Image (tube, rainbow, N blue to C red; front, side):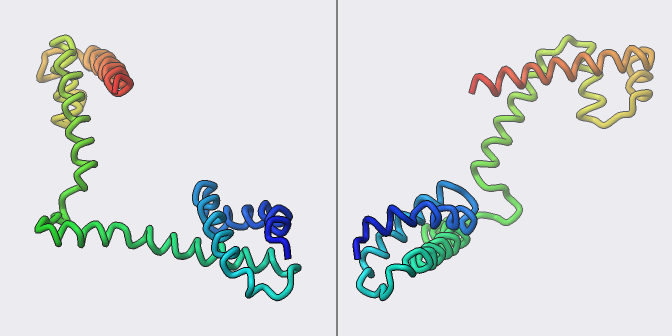
Amino acid sequence: MDFEALVEHHKDAVYRQMVRACGNHADAEDVLIDALLNAYRAMGQLERPEAFRAWLAQIGRRVCWQLKRREALRPVLQLSQLEDEGLQVRADEPPPDVALALADMRRHLLAAIDALPAGDRDVYRLRELEGYSGQDVADELGISLAAQKSRLHRARSRVRRYLDRALAAR
């Protein structure tokens, strides 16, 4: 049996099966390569060349399952590694990368609010940060409800543009 000829004839069909089994092209490519390597090593076990496609697909599915099992265990293994190092992650805390991203976003948001003109900033803070109603903000600042709505709209637009520029610069 010529392994290369069998691979050339069946690899595309098996690859399509691996895309369905793995759920994405990158994993399917990795799985197919591992499956081909495993098949090459076990080629002596294949009794009929016409069964090569099904045999290779079965090997690929096993490799895909192993990959998925490893990925499912990765968070548990990372936590156990942290514990082995004497570190502990509290359940109510976000993961460090999420906490860092949230802190960065908060810093940008506060800078955006500080960059607003004073009247717009007051309306924005009372409405968006303090949760006051539109009428309460208008009463507090001694402006009409229409003026409050206009300032809030303008402030939201400016904050959005500021954040867009800040995040695009990253």
